[in-house]
Length: 202
Image 1 (cartoon, helix red, strand yellow):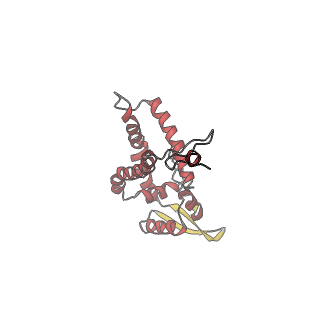
Image 2 (cartoon, rainbow, N blue to C red; image 1 turned 30 degrees about the vertical axis):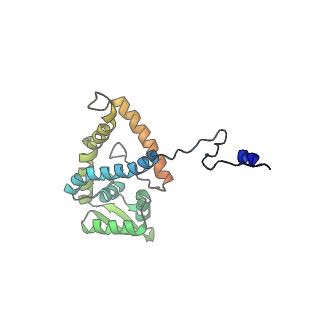
Image 3 (spheres, rainbow, N blue to C red; image 1 turned 90 degrees about the horizontal axis):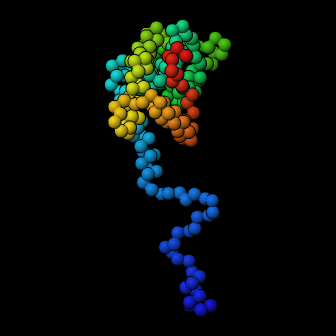
């Protein structure tokens, strides 16, 4: 083979491999990194936003979730939940939920007893003090519209000339965001089933 032929057939070291027909090239841009770590920053910003009002109630974000996961409707707060079911709602390990319950029990907010049908299981219920506290927290964050206003205000930041979010626009954006978050949580292995319903009595 002549030197000229070798030069013509040798692949260039600087040439990118061709993208197969119908395939999408993955763009290795800073955008992907910004989105991934942007999720983390949004999470911490949400915690920062709620930390002070929760602290005034003597709660943390984790304690709020646990109290909320227990039956807390006006006619349901004395209903009991198995500790294993509570763990599934929160998506945390057995030692974690045990530690959280122990601290809340010391504060007089929850009550733990043995399951009459299965002595190996523990069942949890809110005390009257725990019920009163979670209802107070729900009035502050949900009933007052505080949580919705916080999210609507964030979603309206990019709408020119709008101080508050248009109802239709915010609803559309919220639905899109909800779908994206569900997909990301599932992909990242978060299988907690706790659902924040529109009505605290649901």
